[in-house]
Image (tube, rainbow, N blue to C red; front, side):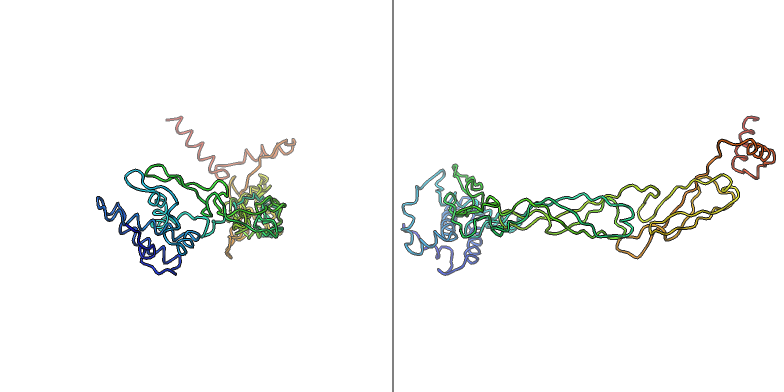
Amino acid sequence: MSKRDFYEVLGVQKGADDAALKSAYRKLAMQHHPDRNPGNAEAEARFKEINEAYDTLKDGQKRAAYDRFGHAAFENGGGRGGPGGFGPEFTSSMSDIFDDIFGDFMGGGRGRGGGGGAAKLRGSDLRYNLEISLEESFEGRTVEIDVPTLVGCTTCDGSGAKPGTGTHTCRQCNGHGKVRAAQGFFTIERTCPVCQGRGQMMDQPCTDCGGQGRRQENRKLSVDIPKGIEDGTRIRLANEGEAGLRGGPPGDLYIFISIRPHDLFQRDAADLYARVPIAMTTAALGGEFEVPTLDGARAKVKVAAGTQPGQRVRLKGKGMPVLRSKDVGDLYVQLDIETPQALSRRQRELLEEFAKLETEENSPTSGGFFTKLKKMFEA
């Protein structure tokens, strides 16, 4: 029985483009797939016929030969048969069934080389650890960094080919980027080991980059550090990572920010905390002192008479700026009261005299505590 015209099998005109071929194939293949027609010999035969037609017409070289010589172009192309009556025209297309029918539902299919062009490999993302001071986080600034990376080769413009030379179709995979081996009913498909899936081979590789289209270089970049940035923040610089292989798109650069510990301040979000020791007499009698702030100025801290250890004084608006906001946090000064040491004889005499005059009203917390304790012992 003579074979039908492949264009007739798919129901398309002879000049149909690739999109029309693929659309017709997908519709017919899903309609006549054996899984949808179990035990239907006619559907099985039609499915094989559809796959044979599409397998020929989707390939530019095969299609050109078919258009010129018809079926005679492939009469000496290989044996028939196989397990269950499925010949090479069926098994060679099994991968296409999944690629072409289900590929769009699985993220666009598995890109091939050859007629469609091999997918260009995206460059790797890079990480750069940047340590800044709390003052730099407060003020914001532009930092220059030196990043070792792979950049596009300027000699070959990233193509990997020596200037003045071209490319040729890989003879191993005939431009498909993949090779197949039939094992009974199944077909194993893998990346072409010769062209690494590109489908094309360079006539001569670029001598400066060894055919990779990229080379090692240290790049100087400017990074804008916004006001109020916090420890652990990640800044993404799009397309500043490694250049892609042979003209592929670059990856991204991620700047991970860490803030050095400060000698005076500890940070919690937008608020700052500082511990300041004060003399016992200042805590008892009251007073004031100044602390530096991150904007380079000084802030006055008033100590109320009778201040207790650990009390905090809030300085509104003296903390950190809130990232991408006009709000500003506060500064909390914790007062640590220092007990006097190395007393002189006169100082000791004065403290002993004060102790004789001290009442529970002078130290209500400790006085009340020991009063309760005394009652517990007497009970």
